[in-house]
Image (cartoon, rainbow, N blue to C red; front, side):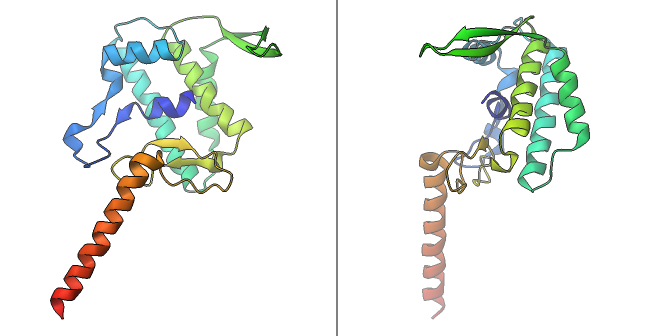
Length: 190
């Protein structure tokens, strides 16, 4: 999903928690150009300082909203108004298209290119989750060094990590080592 992919543009060193290795990918022009291309979004490059500030503001808004949703709070009216303002800047036209499988589908075709349109698409992606999916399935990775945002689409809603093979395994190893160390400390005291 576009919205969580955008929030996760702030990369943390999920293995060690070394904050000096954190990177804001929005500040990496080459990475950002590839990100736009991969998502079929168009905007002028290089990114201006003004556009960068606006993107960071939107990311901050989404991050704060996710934190509230994870705590069980419903979306605030102020959030919905802000999302509407972003979406207003990205007009679209509805068109009927054929999917690769041959079925008819409604598609929204952006009418502009640029950072305002990109932010409108991101806001619309998040608004779509709030309106059409289950916001209670939005999660923040249980690895305190990672904190990536994801949508839990598991049947039993039990996903705790952004990636079970990466963060999940890392946390399992950390718990094992902590138990082992606690056992050694207990044995030393006897």
